[in-house]
Image (cartoon, rainbow, N blue to C red; front, top):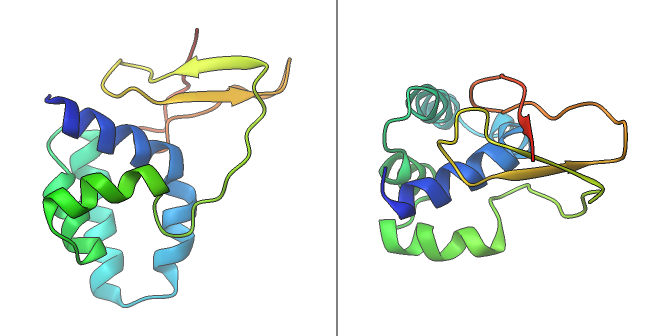
Length: 115
């Protein structure tokens, strides 16, 4: 997987719940496209072109926009404990409060591994 795909997978994994909420208020086409993105991400296949289609941007614009976050995503995370992608497919690092619940990968629904 190239670095652009790793980056987009990291962002999608981190912000998938917010993205689902955002898309729920849109058309069925967008909901189906998001479901396809989730399936492709879980299978560890490229999702950048699909995400660009969902957002209505070019591949490069999508990559650049990821720095600002996906639509509906918010800020603010505890930073006491760190967890990584369960199979190392992306660079997402999730944080939680000490002794809090272990984060789960939004794409595969597997428990993330402690760093």
